Length: 214
Image (cartoon, rainbow, N blue to C red; front, top):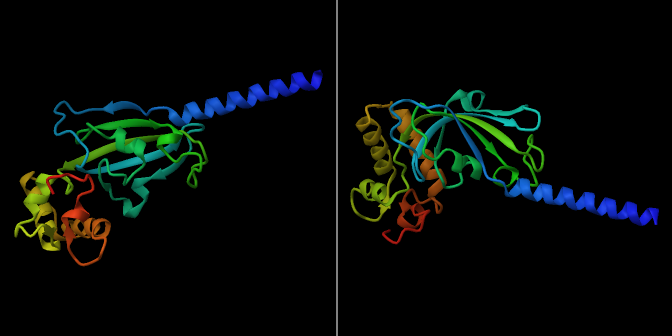
């Protein structure tokens, strides 16, 4: 009888742990605005190209597992928002941010590194990111952007067209950069989108959202 009671207690305890873990995996992100400029425009949306610095911490003990300021020569990171270039929780947590805004984004395991984890983040870990957004430009993933870049109307993008688009967009916003900056952006776009490596991005390769218009 004692064994049966003990077994039942153990079963209940294990069930509780499973339910607790499932709840953590299914939880939503929590966003806390640490600073927001009075003039908070433009605001980031899916498909925009954003430039951010972020630090990652384990919620359990506050230990830091990533710092963009010490990675890749300390440059702020460029991402196209909403297409999976970062974990899902960050993709969601950085929507509607404006340049100069700072946020603290708490991400549950299911929207971070899941049950497998990713070293040095352990399995089933809730993580916290402190994010500062520097700039937003209309990303090279919208239908409108494709049409603007496709100057010769051949339904494919050359390296020259993509580079010229970035240069025009930054100059229009009053934030021109040097040629090496545009070259780096163009190279990154082709690395991620020119799947057949023919030196062109076709409408099909470009169209990550599967828009009918393309």
